Amino acid sequence: MNKDYELKYHRIEEDYWWFAAHRDMLYRFIKKLKADKNSKILDVGCSGGHLIKLLHTNGLKNTYGIDISEKAINLCKRKGIKNVFVMDCIKTNFDNNTFDIAIAADILEHTKNDVRALVEWNRIIKPGGRLIISVPAFGFLWSKHDELNQHYKRYKKSDLIYALEKSNFKVIRASYWNFSLFFPIVAFTYLRRAFQGKRDQKNDNLYELSPIMNKMIFILLKFENLIMEHLSFPFGTSIFALAVKPKN
Image (cartoon, rainbow, N blue to C red; front, side):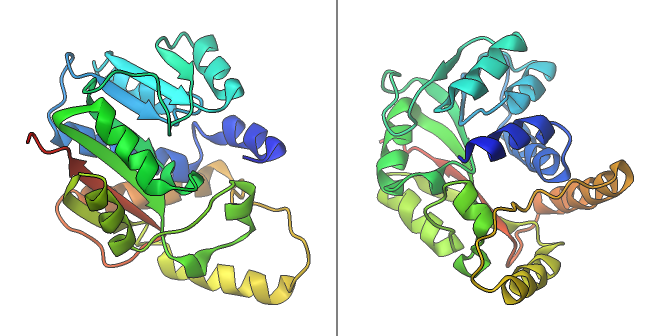
């Protein structure tokens, strides 16, 4: 991740509408799995630890976090979060069959070889354990934001399902996410390209909004999250999937 962008990322990730709504959706998946205080949970790419804090608040304290960024892990430790480590998600130090649940929120697209990463996560998840994963959707939405984030690709739902199945996961469900803002974001992406041309553009897509606007968008997506607990969306700017490691 670009260093200047990482500083901004950590500064706003607690309250910014996208991160907050994304965490809300992740937690809804975890609740559906009926995770309890004994569930051993790994947050792959834990960043500043906001998801881990949310889990702790709701009684899920048997949590671990890894991130390739030393800054991110230091942020976690300053918040009093334990069991967080600087570690490459492609080659972790965990034993086989360690975790009941692994969460990889917008991590896979940072890896050159996504199947290699998924095989590693499969190794450290217990048989019958779950993987909750999200990735950015649709190559036609590629922008400078992806480059600043050091992404290698954006996914179609079929791409993600194929990679999961190739890595010995069984996909339980998959859905596009951020359906509500899909068309405005598509329009904005293409307009931005048209006016910028080929000029170097260092701006990311994390536009800081007024607190009221930020809250309104969060509420909109939280309502979408409620719907997505029961239905899957045909398109969106991200993809969520839930997969299981077979017992045999």
